[in-house]
Picture 1 (cartoon, rainbow, N blue to C red):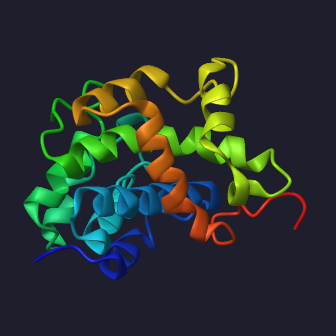
Picture 2: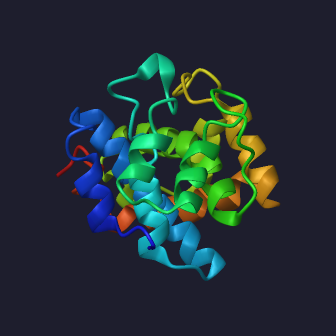
Length: 189
């Protein structure tokens, strides 16, 4: 059965409780919805996978994705969705290479949304008026949001056959309508 956002939130409820991790899950969720729309796929389904992607991170940060497969399969999550989640750790903590557009998108947007979030947090109007040009300037500054791995982002975008700027634009547009929920409405609000 296809994973829904409602079911993903239910599954994450007890395993993702820290606010910053919930916000990250939502950022990735909305970015994935936008990527699904770009590829003409099921937005709710991709959002659900994005929301659930860090299922075991809070409890096992040093063993990320080692405690994901079994509990999610036991909870009835489709093996393809579990594989997509595992693939975002490719060459970091898993050997599951992203192959579908969903998997490649998750791999690319996971880190990318972190830089978008950092950018938007500095702006008076948050993500509401964040333009691609401003984002790309910050993206190119390696000292800005330094913990976000640009090489992974680049690799993910290459897997998709897209430029970082294209994927970033899609993600920004996907996150923008949810600015208030993800705390990116800006300092002027």
